[in-house]
Length: 204
Image 1 (cartoon, rainbow, N blue to C red):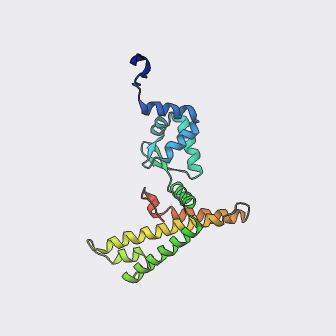
Image 2: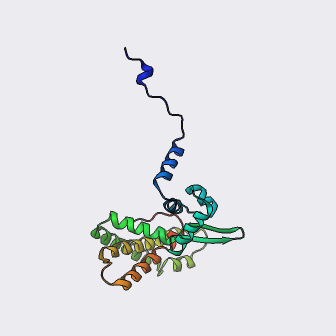
Image 3: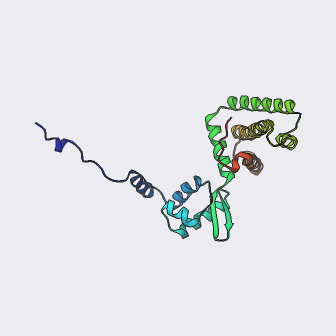
């Protein structure tokens, strides 16, 4: 007869989250950890707070955060107590545009753009306004039209995203050089407005 105490593995009493963190620290560089933490930082934090989360020293975190600010991946906010950092709206936009480009075919994006334009045209005709700001200007507090304003703005933001994602299908880094890169950056900045100022989800 087999002794049950020998066949049953001992229960692990450790902290799963701490074990996962330790593995993350072992498998990544300080630069990668600061980047990973920054990419999920939606509210401004001081370098020390980000350093603690990334398991690096504050000077190391500050050095890498400065680099991310320079390349547009991070945004810095000056306060009376120092500088705080968060992921930039542009980096969020680029990440979502790239994700949609990976997930949707060229035909799917083209169809989505057509549908979004039709919905925007329908709102324009229904309310007799050129854009959501024009409509908002005419509304009083409590009017039902505010839902249409929100919907209209969402449609325009998603149209920008879909157009930017579609443009990646025609982008060739070996052709067009600087002009193509500037056009791509311009589309990304356009898409980073509006919904990308916060964490609202875009859709196509």
